[in-house]
Image (cartoon, rainbow, N blue to C red):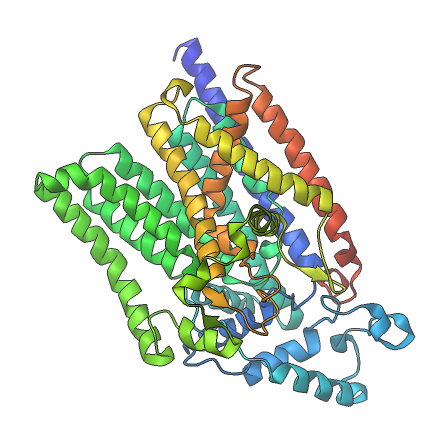
Length: 501
């Protein structure tokens, strides 16, 4: 091997080690914060756990029922009041000791009251697709069979998120390297940002955590379609299964699936018009592999919940009503101030999450301002950088465009949902704040987001120094880590968490 070849091999090995370290660092970070927060967080963790218990018995939910008795048997001893209440609500101005640390016989009245309070809760997540709950129930089964019991086995379910975020970081690297193998700022910047992204959904049980992995796999498959004129049967099957997995993880991933399909169809259109048998067979294979699992779930949902997505009954139970089409256009989102309220709340939530502590949202106003402004600026920079004079190949330009448009489509989908409904007496969204701003609903777009965000930095700094984008990302990551520790440090003191077992 010549010297240049040896140098290249050495650099590739070092890069592989660095990516492995980022995957491990991301997993450890998630494990630590997951262990710091007690159960059950305010982002519907109890509802998601209720579905995990049902799937663990191979039982699909059939209605929007109250929490199962088995779920209550876990919630009552292990739930912490620290998410939604302040200490002054309790005797002597401090939170009570965890029930699981006390003698059961001495606290029977408290147990009865707690059980009654939780037993009235309706599980509005029951119609959600099954993939995450199936995976989490299998993971829980493994934990039980290695001897984990009680609170340890609950944390074991959360610790699945460590594996998922490591996979997301790895996928981010593979995608960035596939798009721009010669651009080190993308190859390393995308996994670096993903490894330390501060979204706190990864510290709780919920189906959003699987979305980045599923759509990441679909995005990677889509890139292969852009590169080839002769798609193989394997690529078609894998793409179809990735579409199915993305949809069957979370309904809010639908706009991402649509964007991927539009990109693939646009690529295939010339071959389809020419009636290429190979292309037609590949496309039919893709459709069948996606349609069979998705169609099966839709049929089940229609039969059990009354409509194709299970949303109609849920909307009724929540007290929402559909506005007439003419009423959509009176929504405040169509004003500059209203749009900024929507964007600020959604993007801040997308970055840092929605967990509350002692009744207050865990956030840092300075960080939130930075997240919302930088995302808007860098999205604009990335779109400007797609011009032909920016030095990108056609493939790079297409890939980054799809990434940016996927994120825009996901945001647009939430904007569309915001303007359709009168939210009645619902707390969030509400008539006073009629916006879907739960950033976790955008989690499927995390890898595309990281791709255009890092490219936006690179494009702005392109004429200064080639190493500067990585340096800027390093500073950004330090800022993110510092703000996240500052925001979440109070949870480590909780008597209800894993560190106080």
